[in-house]
Length: 221
Image (cartoon, rainbow, N blue to C red; front, side, top):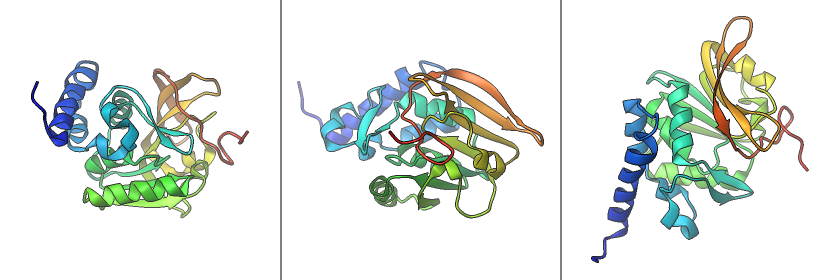
């Protein structure tokens, strides 16, 4: 069997991901599929897990956190319905993979990460990919963006007991929040639409995420 350079191997693995794990299921948005095709997931996983870069499962990235499986990244992105003029807030930068996918679709992405080392690593990878429409912050994501502003879309990439109240104040009327909600080991992935009076939720599927720790999230320990 011939040997292939790493980039060729990853290209083939990326195509398999698109064909079987995304198009083969319910990912139909062409912009989401294009973004998933363009962002090299291998740049966001630890060297010890490069062989699994395009496997349809989560992988550890350090600090007790994970990079979500490609299908869930694509599903959450599709459900967020990002357009080119959207300003998006992401709670939980993690590896930066989801951030990079969102940055391909949105006008600007603002992302918050609790762990400084993860934020710094993600910033370096995105810079290396030439992605410049992202603003990073290290802090408690459950408290929302530290400056007073509003967002067209909000994605929460870790489980919350309920949508944190600061985020309900930072999403515009008519905006969408996608989040895994629940206190158990299995949560519900929900897309919320903001109306002038409330958030209206729509169940998507069951998921498993690490928890958001913070003032409006889960307590440590």
